[in-house]
Length: 173
Image (cartoon, rainbow, N blue to C red; front, side, top):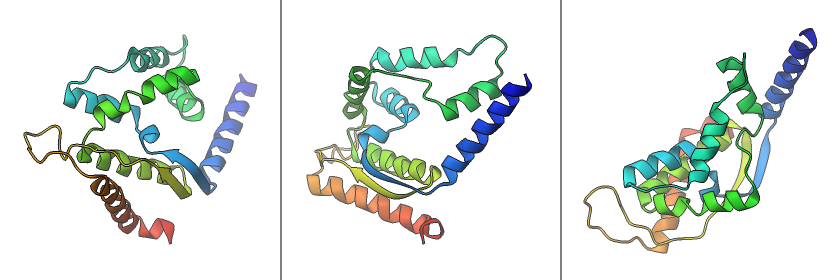
C-alpha cells in the first residue's frame, strides 16, 4: 500500500508540474473544444437527440472499481482519458456538434469556454481554428432575426476573444 501512495503522490506532483508549465496549442478546432456537458446541455435546450456514443461513454466512466472512493475516481479522471474512443467514434461525436451549436449564442458560449479551459491549462498561446458558418442569431428564443453572415460569425468570435483578454489581462501580460 505504501508503494501505491508513493506512486500516486509522484503522479500528482507530475500532474501539478505539467499543469503549471506554460503551453502552446497550435491546432485547436473550436467545435472540437466544446465541453461535453455544454454539448449535452445545449442539446436539451434545443430538443436535439444526441448519439448514444456520448451516453455510452458517460455510463462507462461513471462506474468505478470496488472500494474506490469518489476522490480516487475524480483524481484518476483528471489525470487520464476515462472516455477512450476510436477515431471513428470521435468523428461521430464531432458530427453532433453543429446540431446544437447552431446560433451565435452557442458560438459565444463555446468560444468563451474554450478560452477558459485553455487558460486553466496554462495555455499561453492558442491557435483556435474554425470555418465561418451561417448560423441563426438565436435558435432558442422566438427571435425572428434570421441567419447571420460569415462576417458576423467571425466578429462574434473576435468579440468574445477581446472580452476574454480584457478580463484576463493580468494573466497574459
